[in-house]
Length: 375
Image (tube, rainbow, N blue to C red; front, top):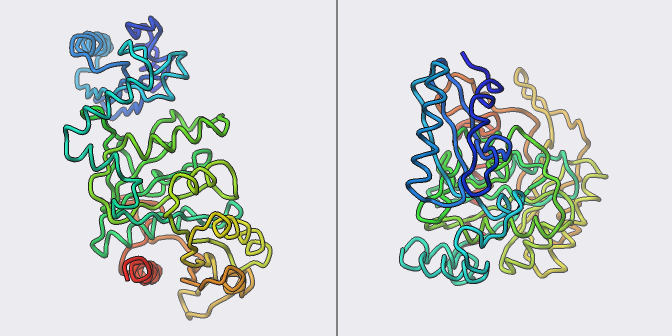
C-alpha cells in the first residue's frame, strides 16, 4: 500500500495550468485518504472549467494507475480567496474582473437561487437566525466541548443548527465531532459538512496536515466573513460560534459583524479562571451584547461507583462570574469523557450520547437556551 509521501511524489509533476506550479507544492491536493488499494483526494482549482478539470483528472488517474492504484475518487473545488492570496493571486485572476466586481457578479448569480439569496442575508437581523457566541477568558476550560455538545443538543430538540469553529488558530471542532469529510463547492457556494444534525464550518477543513495558521488580524476577519457570506447554510434556527479564548481580533469582529449576537461564557470553578473569564463577559456587555449566562465546565468529578462528587478545581467560580455579569449559572458540567467506542458508526471523541448523564445536562442547557431566545 502506498504511503502518503509516495502518493504526493507520484502526483507532484502535475501542474496547475494557470500558475504552472505543482498542485502538490501549492498544497492544492488535499484530504489524501489511502485505504488498501483505494485513494481519495480533493483537488483545488482556480475555476470550474470542465476541460481543465478533465485533463487534470486524467493525468492523476494515469499516474496512479502506473503505480498500481486503479480505484480513485477525485473531488474538485474552487480555490477560496485566502488560498488564491497565498498562491500570489488576486481574487480577479480567473475572471479578469476587479474583486468588487467579481463579488457583485457572484452575488447576482446567487440571487438566482433561493438558497443563495437566503444565505446572503444570514447576518440580517430579520433573517430569524439566533446567533450565540461561546466565549471564554482563557484556553483549556472546555469551551469547544461546550460549543459542540450544545449544538448537538439543540439539534436533538429539532432545531436547525449551524456551528462555526471561529477559533481559527486553535480549530478543533471537526476532530471533536468525528468529521471525516470536507466541504464541497456547488454553484459557487460552500456546502457545510453535516454531522449529528449540525452544519459545521471550520478553518480545520482548509489546513493540510494540521499545519499552524500564521495570519494577522485582517486575514482572520476575511475568513470569518467568508464563513458567513460564501457558505450556503440553508435555513437555520441557531448559528453557534466557537470563539477563540480572550478578547482578540476575532471576538471583536464577531461583535461588530453580528450586533444581535448573544453570548455564553464558559469557565471552570477555579477562582482565577472565573476572574479571567469576566473579561470576555465584560467585552460582550461593553459592545451591547446580551450574556445568556455562564456554563461552569469541569465543575466536579463524580465517582461512577459510589456517586460521590469531588470538587477538584474548587467551587463557586461559575456562580460568582454569573453574579459579576448580572447573569445566571446555566449549567455545571462534570469532568469526564464520552463513553464512545471507535467501532461505533457515529463515533466522535467529544459528543456525549443523549441518554448519558452529561448528555442529559446538555439537553437541559439546550432547552434553557431555547426558552431564553424564543420566548
